[in-house]
Figure (cartoon, rainbow, N blue to C red):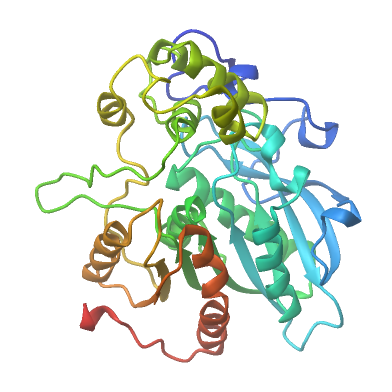
Length: 389
């Protein structure tokens, strides 16, 4: 069921849609009006990406629109957008290994969908390195970022299902792509990557996922008392506003405007329609202190911890990369998450990068990530670091 978003937040079973949900008209390609297939992971349509948006080593770059499952409002199947990149040259015997790239925070407006606007320079270079090494790459935009309804921001179930269904589509679209998959993600995408790892066995048992990589770990877990680390990542009011638009307000809550000052409402309008709230914040002196009508501690308690999850165990190894100078998600916070993942019985390769800030972590991790991908896809064992923590 779809519902225009106005007044209180929509309840379970209803997908909020409309301008307040971040829906903007970017291209008819992203708007699906026909009945949907009854299964997730089915291709709805494809079109070539503009050449200036494709990574240099892409032999083919294609926008895709596919079916996935609403993991936040439980409204059923819905269209999700993304991009598929194939490397240049002939596929090897057995096909290309598929990398599923799970992007970090870009915004919550449809205008921010990377398949539409193009990846930022860092992410484009990262994807290009995988292509250069001979991997196919599928890059989901995630639920609501391009497709209808709110972008379910940092909600692992929604993001994880979008990731797995993108992999299903890629494997079905081209016989040269092997059902041999490694998932990778940065920051917000680390939660998407681990969400997909957690769901793979139950949601997509048809996929042969060999491993998952998470850099700049956003996922956090409850401690022995049941509490979750209250230290929230981020240094700008737009992170809280993204979460308000993106489904972290409890069902039945008043709309985001209720919690905002006039300055905060200005940032909310930008978040719903554009991808540059930091620029607007700097230009108009919008800060965490003056954007909200309630203390941020109260708002964080209402929204719940960023990246909150519960312990899980996967059937395949994990690699986690942490920048020890991460200014957005402190290394100590990430270390707590790694320890919990280890305690759950997972095989974890934990790479730490001296002097690497939040963004640097992705770039610095590539060689380790590619080596990890080669190990897990060859069937060799990964040496876990869990015993040394």
